[in-house]
Image (tube, rainbow, N blue to C red):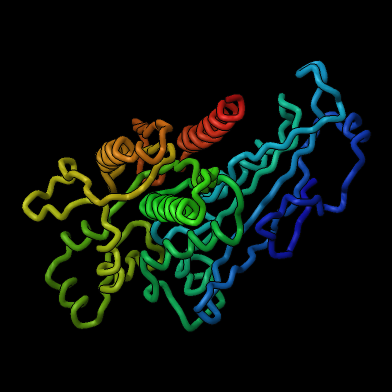
Length: 393
């Protein structure tokens, strides 16, 4: 039974069991399934305050689980009374443009996570894991979103920099330990920059530690240990600018916003695109501006980002919004960058691409979701295997 909580989760929600159903070790033998106990499982959205922005909040759902199992002496030859702890990478969902945390994929990821976490484990040990889905500001139930109670803000008040900051804040305040980012469309663009920012902070911290003490120090573990990207759409605002007609440009110049038609935009069938959004996005471009070449398949990505974790990109071949060749080009960029960054990390991390033959941009059919959740599970297993190999050295 999952316990609900309306309390704001601690950054370390696993330090003690607080579901009100704590039991002695001897009781574990009576639990046939050893199901995970929810430390925090939120049935209603919570709101995370945004620093330096009065009355602005980020809406989110958060789950944290603690699975407590006694190791069997038949498995490892050790005493039954000894336990071991393991951190499974947490999951943070980064949605796409104008998508919210109640979308089909986000809910499917959450259901998969809850089901998977509560299954009986072959390895009998303590495990800890968290799951977060949230709305960027201007989206869903966050400030400025369409279902938010805030009336003073709207989607047009925010831009890509704000959404990157939102994701960083969610990671800082709601998670601890290693995390896997599961990102869709624009969310892949955001996830790559978030992973890069956190990795650069980690590098700076390590350099500062070396400067302060001549003794060797143990590097801090990375926060982002994997990215699963769905229908990656980096630099999509550049494409929008290229396709604007004279009326769009006039509206942007005179009003600071134009309406872009979209089959996904209900009920008006258009998205308001601001000049601020388009201008702000330029600093986050991952590719060169090739004005003389409109074929994005030949664009060579040049923007240097520091992403050293495994990346698995999934894209539908029948995606009419963002060509699957975008994911192929992005994978090539990431592979080249990771080779250049081996001086900092000796680990070799793969960049994988899966093209789903009949998939569209949303990749939300049951078959698509199986492919995506399998990729997330495989990335979590890879993290565990790398940890186990390091501990055995």
